[in-house]
Amino acid sequence: MHDLVHGLGHGLEKSNFMNKKKRASLQDVADQVGITKMTVSRFLRNPDQVSAIMQQKIAIVIERLGYIPNRAPEMLLNAKSYVIGVLIPSLTNLVFSEVIRGIESVTTPAGYQTMLAHYGYDINKEEKSIESLLSYNIDGLLLSESNHSDKTLRMIENAGIPTIEMMDITPFANQTTNQVDLNNPLQKIQRIGFDNIKASCAMIERMVAKGYKHIVYLGARLDIRTQLKFEGYQQAMLKNGLMPISIMSEDASSFSLGAQLLQQALKQYPQIDGIFCTNDDLAIGVIFECLRQKISIPDQIAVAGFHGHDVGQAMYPKLASVITPRKSIGITSATTLISRLHSKSSFDINIDLGFIISDGESI
Image (tube, rainbow, N blue to C red; front, side, top):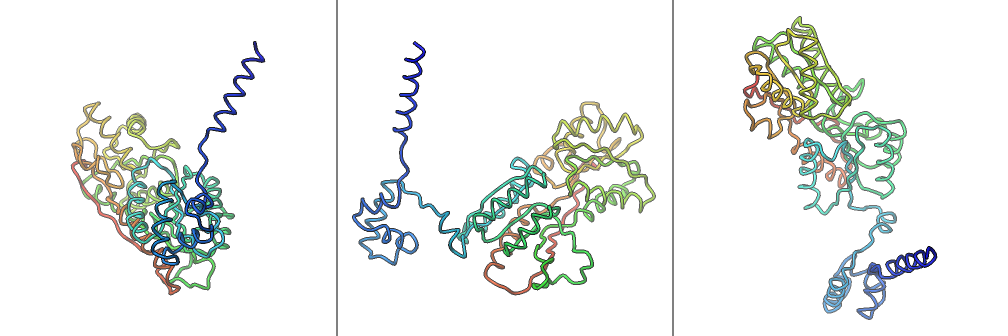
């Protein structure tokens, strides 16, 4: 019985394998039309290279067969692939979904495809993802991080393609000009975004001006931008003669984590009158927890977030936040990258798109 079942199973596997639909090939298209593969290939590269009648015949067969061109060999052989690699730390983070929308609003009309990869805030995963993207001979690279491994920097240098870091504008050490020197291999990575340190400073200055003195910083993930925001918070607190206090978690940001961090803050620092969060997710969680504990906002505790997500701007009380230009960052980064692909002229190494401080109703 065992041999019979095994035999039947093997037969079913073989049958399923044999019945699997074969992907239409270039040769299939050529055979259906009655021409050579070379003619089909010429049509795919530039339809005007074949007669109008032949264009129509090939197009009809391609449509009928559902033929999908394999661009990988062409991308590896040709100087241009019309593909731009995009690295983001998270596929679920609303910050980067808006950045991607901005990018693709430019790349698609310009005839470029985006090849997305995410690295989960892991520098080693970013390195592997960039290595994979570069193997497809991409034309340019849009990154979401400013902290890279040595191997990543070497790969970018060897690739010799335009590369832009989005979301922050940390300047080069000893940089005296905003104009890049194209002969300097250290100045190959352009930065487009805003100053996270200044943005955090500005929010704390606003909170202090409104009378709040015991402000706690809540952070998550502990990625580079969380650290930069903390640096800005700390600078502003010390400047005003106030004690910086932070509670950090390596966990991913969420509403529930914001609530947990507030509970911890209230236990450790019962005198707090303000909360500044590394992002709106934590801040919204803080507000929900304040409402649950019947803590009046902003009378008892002021709450501020970062990025100005729609949910925070629609809730009550309306969340105070640093409004960041995420979609504009995507648009400007893609536009600048494509412009650099068509021109070898010098460019600004840092493009600052700024930020807006919104008081909302929570500070």
